Length: 135
Image 1 (tube, rainbow, N blue to C red):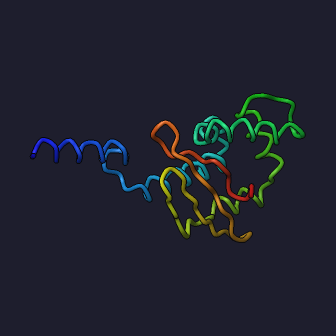
Image 2 (image 1 turned 60 degrees about the vertical axis):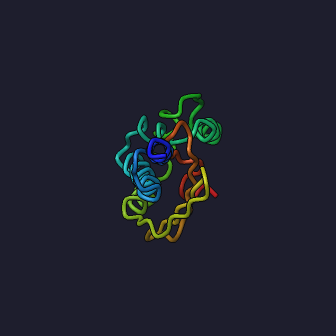
Image 3 (image 1 turned 90 degrees about the vertical axis):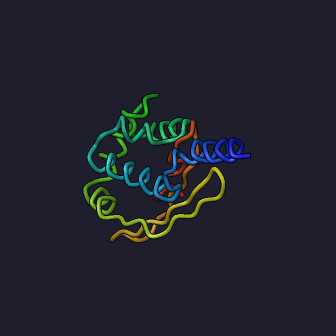
């Protein structure tokens, strides 16, 4: 019986990211996404998106730059967003996290108002499936 209990605990730890609180993991992902966008780290920003979100992001940015590369699209979107939008993202605070299975939503408050980001578990990690302000 004891072995079965240990096996269950190990399985739960593996599924939840080795004991990391899921809410903390979601917050950390969103914060890393915001920080990387604000700092202009396009590669990191893209790595924090789901695969589907990267494809949609690139498609949506084609009016700014004719590319199939997420990092190039991110640079173009960041430039088009302007300083005011980047400053609002820099100062954004996570006010609420909701998790339902393999999806999560995060409400952000910034000087420009409130926004929502959604995340999906992909490859065992939380990834942004819709960026703040894209809804």
